[in-house]
View 1 (cartoon, rainbow, N blue to C red):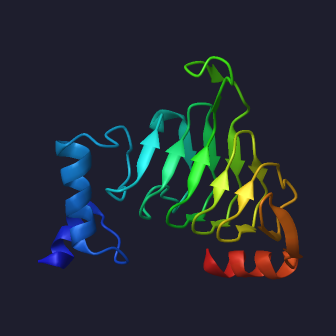
View 2: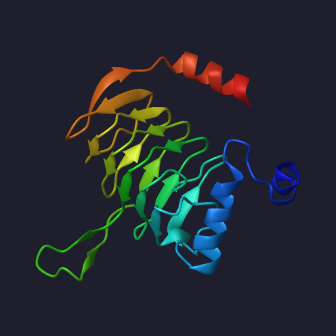
Length: 174
C-alpha cells in the first residue's frame, strides 16, 4: 500500500507516510502553512511563503519547529538542509513603532549548505555555497565566500572547506 501511495503522490522514501498524511491534515484542512507548495512539518511555521524561493531537493520547514519569516524574501539554494528548531528571519520591527516592519535585503543561502539545529539567521545575511552553520549559531553578518564552517554568537569562521573536494562530491552525486 505504501509504495503505490509514494508513486502516485511522488512522496520521498526518507519520510514515513505518516509525515505526508499529517502534512495534508495541517496544510490542506487546518490551513496551517497553506501557501507552502511542499510538505512541511506540522510544528514548523513559514510566513510569506510566496517570497521563499527554493532550489532542487530543498524543503525548508520539513524539520520540526522551524520558523521561517520571508517577509523581505529568502532564497535557499539546491540541496540545502535546514535542521530542527532553526529560525530564518528576513525582517525586523522598528524599535519605536513595533507594528512597522523594516526593509532589508533578502536572505540568500547558497547550494549544498547545512543549517544546524537551533541556529538563527537574521535579515540580509548571505551564505555562500557549502556553508555549514553549527548548532546554536546566531548569524548576524554574511559569509558570501562560502566553503566554510561557521559557529558561535555572533557567527565566525571556525574552519575552511576544501573547494576541490566539495566540487568532486557535487559532481559524483549528480
